[in-house]
Length: 143
Ligand code: FES
Image (tube, helix red, strand yellow):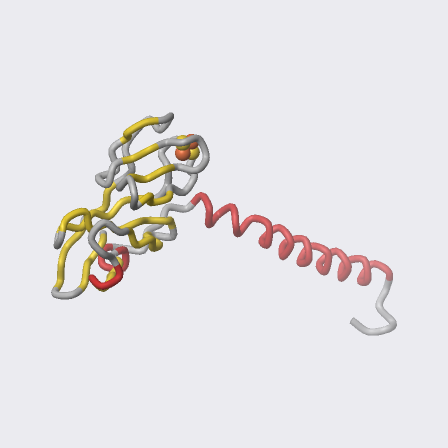
């Protein structure tokens, strides 16, 4: 656009410029919503998480991220592993592992879960989600 552009050309240019800026702003606001609503479809093997056996001890818990959400791996008995979602089934708070009582406690409303994820008390309506666990040498495969 030259300095001698007519008012109509300037108006048209400003319209295009404002439209482009509006599209960028709309995209910036819409992208998080699209990501939130879209299913997590990373595909088979990419969903598996590898955890070295040494990360978890008998009676202890190892918290990790599974598909972008908090999860926990337990070893209730030597060589026996359990992987669970760490998201409380009541209103979605993250459960804590209480090693003294060998149970999960939800800090929000006092929900309690067994090491297998079963509801022991409080308002949670259903057990914690369990994930498949496989052993591969010194590595635990979750998912
Ligand atoms: S969110 Fe866990 S008991 Fe309410």
